[in-house]
Amino acid sequence: MFSYKDLLKETQLFCQRGIETGIVGESELKQQIPYIFVGKKNGNYMIVQGAIHAREHLTALVVVCLAKYLVKNAELNINGGIYFVPMVNPDGVRLCQEGVGFINDKQRKSNLLAINGGADFSLWKANADGVDLNVNFDAKWGEGAQNEFFKSSANYVGKEPFSAAESRALAEFTERIKPCVTLSYHLKGEEIYWEFGQTSHRRYRDKRYAQAIAKYTGYAVKEPQNSVGGYKDWCIEKFKIPSFTIEVGNDKFSHPFPYDQLGVIVEQNKDLPRKLLNSIIKDKNELHSVGIDDQLFV
Ligand SMILES: [Zn+2]
Image 1 (cartoon, rainbow, N blue to C red):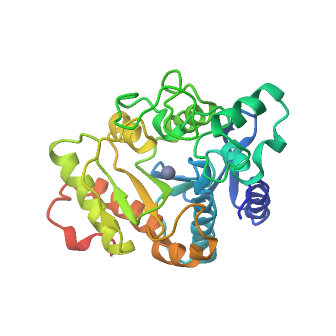
Image 2 (cartoon, protein in one colour):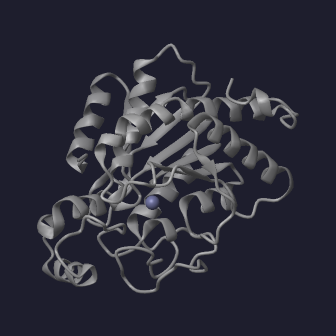
């Protein structure tokens, strides 16, 4: 399994190779959330994030592998810069992999055991406060069909939007970076989510990118669902940028998701961030992006 400690080691290795690394912010338990930056500092940025859901920790390793791919293949031209944030939810990932042993606060420990109904946290999705970070963003917050209003291993929206340290940190980081696109890696299903109430040309534009991602990865474009309060939803609504959730991993496997699928997943996604960012920058620079579908991702 890919742990938080492994992530810190990997981040250090990038740093030693002269790649920019840094901190997005801190988790509820004051653990730092690192990023790795690859590409150019020219104002055209993408954020690629993983493991916002604890049990999806394999996506943290996927995001690290995507950053490594670009570093190793330095001849591939990136027209902007990519911030890779492999593990948005380090507390949740540790809880998932280690149980409550690493938590010092006795009250928090017993609360978590009670919420979880036992010591096996391997299916836990939330942070260390029982908040599901991907329904804690300020985008139709609390209006989702599956939203819950009590602490839980999944689906609890929190007291208010951005009540959790991790979603707040990612939101503040995003406001600072001002990306022109974001990608969020989740598990599982080999699906692409792109919609959050966009209208007219933005709707056409974002669906078209989703179709290009589908063509590249082999995943299916999903039609609108009653899902709200996620990072992608907030990015679409607040910044009016294309923003995607990619559910990697074949649905025939169950959680905890098998790590031997890493190679397949990385192969399907390895050059996606660069290709997507480059097409978006190209479209921004050309007035007429409509009607050139077959030219996407060339
Ligand atoms: Zn997820």
